[in-house]
Image (cartoon, rainbow, N blue to C red; front, side):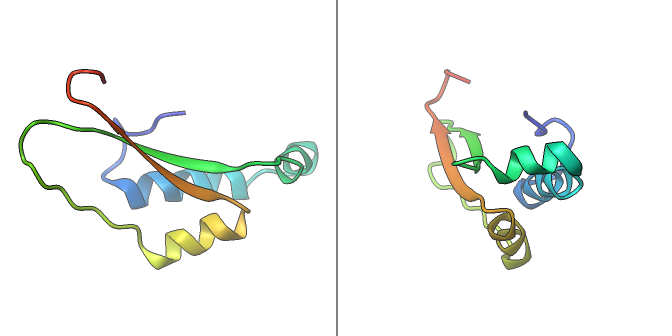
Length: 82
């Protein structure tokens, strides 16, 4: 699921996914808990300029991901492929 068009940044996007997972109940929560891999993959489209870019995830967001048993992955797409 992609939320980039609706959110202000990475912390908000990951926080929204956490909120969705945290709200699961019953059979859906059991299914989530039975997953062998939970990965929040942040994808970024690289461009030729600027040559350097920086972002960060807040500790509170990382704690929420960890409490859900999740990992953070980062994918950088080459220019012109996304």
